[in-house]
Amino acid sequence: MAAIALTEASVVAVKNCLRDEFPDAKSAHVSEALAFSLGYKTHAALRAALTPTEPDPPFVLLRTDRMRARLVEFGYQDDPEFDFELLIKPPPEVISTVPSSAYEIEYNTLRKRAWRNLMVLAVNAALEQKLFSLKAGDNRFPDNMRRGHPFEFVLPNGLAARGAVSDAGFDELSVHAAVNPNPRHMDVLTFGAGLESGDAVGSTWVERRDGAWIQTSETSFHCRRALLPVLAGLRVEPAGYGDRGGIIM
Image 1: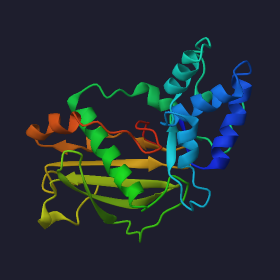
Image 2 (image 1 turned 180 degrees about the vertical axis):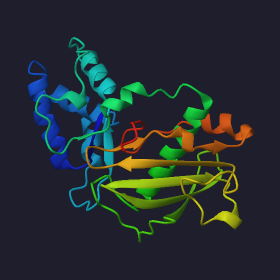
Image 3 (image 1 turned 90 degrees about the vertical axis):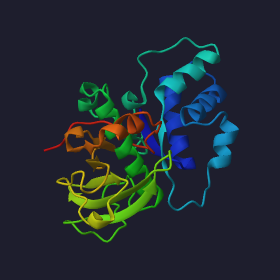
Image 4 (image 1 turned 120 degrees about the vertical axis):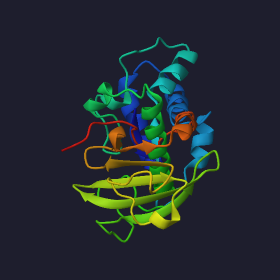
């Protein structure tokens, strides 16, 4: 997968690039498949969602599997080698969400899935609250490198959560989160935080210079046993960034 800001200019740029990738496909079919890859049922629905005056458009994932599936529905042969991450001539509007290190990472345990879900929910919440964007250097919070800027959010199952975000340098962000946060430890969400800060506590870094993804660090995760399957069972997708990547040292 890759991602784009949801603007008309970005959609047009990707569409033009896809015409080179699929020269035998009808233009209308490419438009419909592109819309489907962005999560819309039709090109018309995508067009309706594009607001020319939107000053701060969200980033949206380009789902390779959905693009290929839609073209197959139109009668074209599947192209298993196609991937938005591997466009022949990627326009600058396309950002990578899958570093090479991502292929070595699997969320194949309850603990790993629980960490992943909590971090995705925290980063999604911070993006929705516009504390930062996925553009390199675009921070919008009063930074405190020591404690981070706090924010509140709620998990899909209704559990309360608290996050903290700070600039980590090199266009990266440090993001921390606690589920059922302890009110007596509201200001200690850091990489050293443990269960004194909440019933589940996790941390990550958000890469934004070479692409957009969270760096996988489930070792910075503490969770009460009863909550582990609850967090692992949540269904959540990242809002325009990748959900795995190696830690950049």
